[in-house]
Image (cartoon, rainbow, N blue to C red; front, top):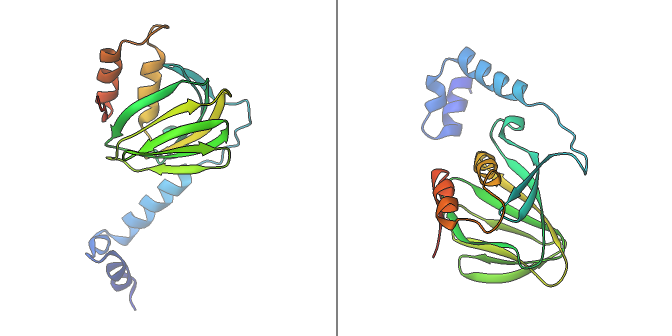
Length: 179
C-alpha cells in the first residue's frame, strides 16, 4: 500500500494525505523535538495558595507542549472546591493521603489514599477534604492552560475570597460555578 493511501485509510477523511509529506514530517518532528524530559523532585515546583487549596505545580503547559498540567494539592480538612464545570479540560484526581469527598455528575463518593477518579469536561464536579487529616492529592488537567487561572487566583488578597471576583477569573478560563 502506498504511504498516501495508508495515511488516508487511517484518518477516515484523508485530511493528512492533503498535507505535503515533507511538511507533515517536519511538523511531527518539531512537535516531538520540543518535548524535553523533566525530573521533578518531591519538594520541587511552584507553590500557589489558590483560595485555601495549597498547590505545588509540578508540570505546566510549557513543559508538555500544552498537553497536561499536574499539581499536588495539600489541603486542610473542610477545604474544598464548590460544584463547577470545566468547558476546556478534563481532570484526574489521585488521592495520596487523607480522604476526599468527590462529587461528579451528582454522584458523591469518598476517595482514600490510592483511589483515582476522572472528571470529564462539561460534567459538574466538586471536592472537599473530609475527616480530621490533612489530605494530599495529585491533580492532572488536560489540555494545559488552567495553570494561568490558578496564577491569577493566587494573586487575590488573603482571607475570605470575593466569590464574584473568583467566578469572574474562572469564567475567563471556561469554568463556571453551579449555585
